[in-house]
Length: 531
Image (cartoon, rainbow, N blue to C red; front, side, top):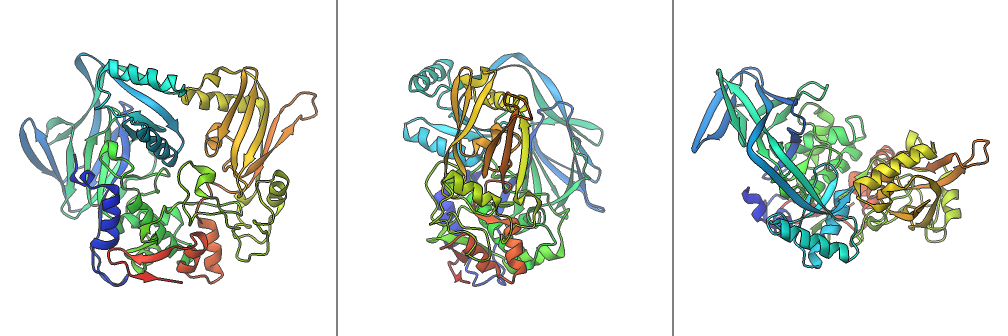
């Protein structure tokens, strides 16, 4: 296990804020933090997959691995093709895990894991596909213990918990060839003299992507492999900022994005502890594509904010952000369960405060909410296509989506056949749906908060209302989903930040708008900047 996992999250946060460097400003050459990104998370799930790693021109790859009991190192200037071979096991193996919950997001899984630990059950968070909370495998390590636990939690009312059982006769092994000799290994470290490696996935149509740092191919918790990129934090940001906010965004918006992306990364280093890396490279974390898309504009924004992080009471903030808010930001608890973040509260996403008064016209009221959604002008996102949207969906499509969602959740309602009614039962102050009821022929079930987006295909946020549609017939045909925004809507709006920057707002002022009460600090010394 990597030594970094012996550092607790609390200690790591304090270390990052107070002990890393004595820099006094962004121009100082602060020591970079090495992080581990899973850029290909489940290599081997498909036995036809291939990965090709290449050195840059004039360079060579260095391969380090254990061959038997001997540590071996090879060098090659040729591309390295990693293939999957299905290896027959000498005897059938049964793998089991107790799945205590399946969730759309890490934040929801993390809160569930915290609740299970408070009940005395040791758990771990996994992501075989969707996020899941597992009973800790090295604690519940016999069939008897797993079934006793399952009986106990189901008797306590947690009916969606289940034992996932897999009978394995073959397992994927990674195979590769150098200098005419073939190797099969479970762990492989790949570096290069120039510290640059190109990676090409066979299942993707894009060209090979260029990454800085070194790579490690290692087993994960799902029986396949993860290709991990070990890279410095500031270099990592060069592969995040262009893809998260774009190279054409105004400078202040890019700088705000760089500070938030840096903060987000440092606060979430514990996310993939089960698989011995720290962050992923997609929207479950932050989009990271290495050095292939770097630009002078985004590099300049990263350099100008080097070491800057956003804090609240001298702790890293939960630096959540989304594409758009639909005109009003959400509280943390509007979307996920868990403790409120005082700096994540509903704010009308507009440069002036005269569009809507949330204290006097609460969006938890259905009538007020529908009036708010009818407003289109004066917001930071008014000119964006998905600021307001309307999507009509038939009952057939709604039924199919709900059945699929409920099956993944292991819900007894997955067997329903007919939707009779869908109704919003509760909204938050920001207008987000907190509870939505679906009436079927076998009973009524409820969807809560962000799982609404998983259950329906049409809405791209939880900021919407429903209109029943008959389409000229006597029976219900389906529903129109009428709403605004894209994503969870918590924290900074990337579209909104760009509008504020165009209006002349500085990056500290933009961050103070979306995260009130926070401060910008320099990583390592606690120095503060204010707007």
